[in-house]
Length: 214
Image 1: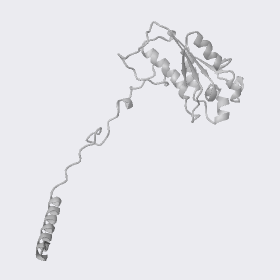
Image 2: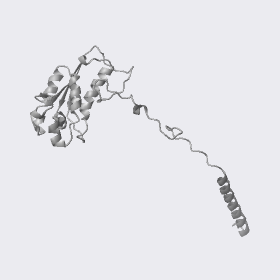
Image 3: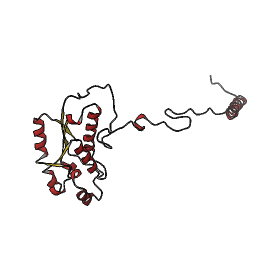
Image 4: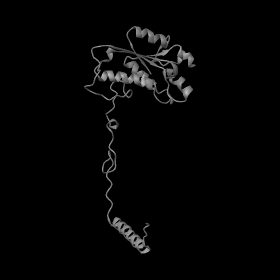
């Protein structure tokens, strides 16, 4: 059997719904909004506190100043023995997209020196050679040669001087210089000249140097 609902019943029901809706709206208008809670990581003033790695003094460059920044850690695994001598050969073959910035691989050489010295290893116990080849070759050029090609000063020269003072031998691959259309007279005074990066790496590995590629 079909059930019928009278029009008057529907009207009363609709009226009730309208009343409830209007009452709810009025009630909502009279209740003040709860204050928004502060999002995580912010202060009540609205300024976000800086992360530890953004604070002054978190990053430091104890030996190669202004380059190769590190964060000093104590009580970590695989710390070097300050009484041993560490021999490392870096092969730098990658250039950068911005000629006005220091080569990333060269900066990692500086970081390695800073890490060892911060861990207590004296410079006299570090035997580090960085052979430069491939697209990294322009970093070893004099400022005049670099500026003639890139229209900016060579940003790597101050770092090359710092590495030289720390006893690091940065050496240019003798094959890569003409391959990159430079002259041997255009090599920085803080850079030595090797016969070949391939020979340099293989000869030093025979002498017990650890190999790192950048």
